[in-house]
Amino acid sequence: MANDKDPKKNFAQESNEVSIRTVNDIDLVLKGGSVERAEITVKKFVNQKWESQTFIVKPGEEIGRPFKKWIGREQVTIDYSTHYKLIELMKEKKSAKWALKMVFIDDEGKKQEEWQAE
Image (cartoon, one colour):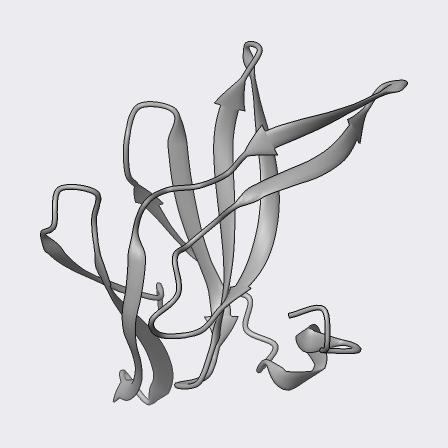
């Protein structure tokens, strides 16, 4: 993903997001994308507050990874790894709008499907 100069320019500007509850301290937000890659925000509860980081994820890749960021004057590594693997991205017309669907395998090996909100 470091090779992408501006990965956000490749995504449709959609205001609808769906928040997916994963485990007690992690949320996923499918922000948009295409059938080739998705823009997914991983939110993690760290030190009594939510931290978030957005990742560009292609089918076959894991959602999230450790990421260094500044919190106050300290640089810390937050592990945004979910151990979820993105399997497929699909777009389908729903209610006269295109909606993105992501299919992933959770950390228990179960197939999960989530649609972007209308």
